[in-house]
Length: 250
Ligand code: 13P
Image (cartoon, rainbow, N blue to C red; front, side, top):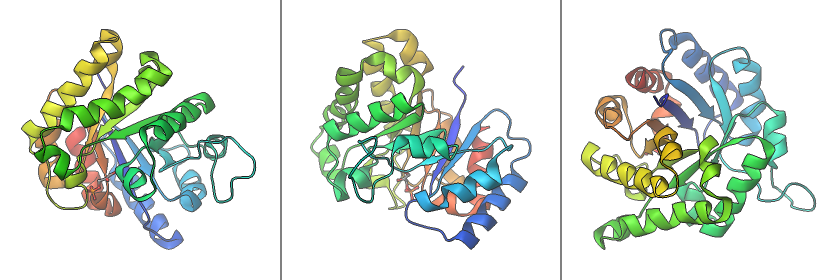
């Protein structure tokens, strides 16, 4: 049995005050959510506040990104060991905004994935196609290539303690969600690709869906066989919405 995971990706949002309020709201409303795991990924500078508020709670926290380097002259970067030092369990790797806006390619994403694991963080590897790629019929080629970059470099065993998130780029922040059938098809494809290397790892791998997941569509998406939770953007910024999704996963 795969334990569902609902992770909030706050992106570049939040202040110290709003973080306090949001985390207090999530903590207060999470009673009864015992079957699903819950995590939040605030901006780096708000991670100490998450640690202060969430230590001792069932809610985990993580980073949205990390450096591919472990230390040295890399101005503006944050190392995996620093995230770990502040109690992070998870770190997003290869989010589509990192890939498209900051030029992260498959090789860099694979390196970040490796660095995260070596430090003891659980990477959440984000994959997904653009609208153009979907219309060209190359979704599997794109997603498969993003996944293969990590498997080829790190070996399939590296996915044994990682999470994958399928986030169709065209569904992120657009209100345009993949239908449960569209999402399930890609999730099944991802699991099958991993199974070609190792059936046991494929069976245990949590594959989250991300892209305009909301209280109104979360249950239907997460009812699909291969959808094991969600990576939530906009709806993770409102305690009520995020809690409703956590309850749907539960
Ligand atoms: P939205 O939920 O705002 O579409 O964002 C999804 C996402 O990018 C999570 O990482």
